[in-house]
Length: 327
Length: 307
Image (tube, rainbow over all chains, first blue to last red):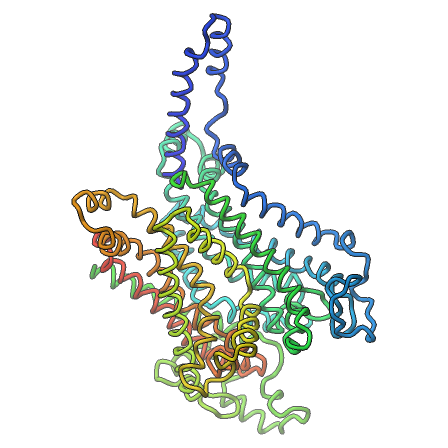
């Protein structure tokens, strides 16, 4: 990423030079010339990575589509009662497996609960796990990766070995074993978050480490050190802002992937437990009656897929905006 | 190259012991008494319990148990279940099934993934390109169990094209589960190939090759594609381990008697030796496939040479 930022500032520089060359030509009268002069002398904006990215993102329709879906799902997760007036736990067996209708868009499940209400309330568990696992993993990854990349040597070796060990454990198998060890009674959002975080941080840490490695070779770091900046200051205010971009891209995509993993664990019966409401549990219940009541699989599956899709698409858009090579 | 190989081999040692110990410790921490679970409501007599505890070293402290276990592993003994069945017997039955499933998925994802990636990269911005981008993102977004059931209903039940359960029909029965298992990786491979080939097609050596009059298929096939496949090979190495370990869901949906299903059953039944034994083998597969990929680097790309 260090290379990218230097390429970026080069590009910004050449744009600035062009603007400077064009400025006098635009003004025909001295007064207009003066105005143009102040415009050019006022740095239109610093060569700031994130403001460039924002300009790039605003032009990308895929980013808007994904952002709308992400915001919608977040809203559903935070306040499901805004989207449905039905109570997901108010069930009546007379409605068992009733197909979708105009009054009840998504039909009813086996217990006769309104399926639309359950799909809305199910968003919270999925999104909460997705966001908290990603945040916790990113925290471990940024701190560990920065230490390993910046100091190198013994710390680097130690962290690399721990990373290797955790990476060698398959995600689902490890998740099953950890969740079994934590006990069946306590399995809720927190337990699932702990189990997945324990297995998910290594890839992000490696990403952070390699990007810190290239950032610390940059001239501005040498300059900061020559000025007597402490390690902490160099790390926090010089390396981190320039090295964190790939981690943010990866984290955006990871939210989507974790949501799918959580659903899979719940589906296997070792993630969230009834009476919790979650998309994974709903799909798990749907599997026994696929031919009889396909809507039970369709709706939670659709919402799950759209949420995952939106996060992945958003990550893709971010990466494209961050990669100067693709322009 | 030689020194790199040695260092890489040495790095495997802590990874192997670390990963197996972690799994061992976690399985050890699973609440409940496996010996009491063995006989249901009526616990076995005290002397039987003591005999069994002694036989499976259940009263030793954790590090000692691990030490005894790992010594056994190196003597070719993966341990036995509390019902006296050898873990190696279970492995002998389940492992080939999982390998066959993983290889089907592997073949499927390499052929279709690389093909889709090349087609998309050659016509950047075309309909084909957008189609590949949208389908791959969609496939990644759909959880594998939703994909599995949908494939089962559509291809198996509605159109009756392929067998949907078990492995009794020979290799045909692996096609559908293999496709489902490989779908996510296929999407990644298509995207990796596309990005990497697009970058390489703009490289100087490609321009040179075209300028000297080399036919385009040869330029793409011989020069650009070969270099573009390096990240794909890396991915494949990591993926082989994931395919073997991640087959639990696919094996469950399609009722395939493989390693993943055995591990899942063993965790539920607290058959700790089976869990540790099978996961140990999976960790080994993962570590070794990563090693092979790292060593393949140098062979694939003459620019990469390790000192």
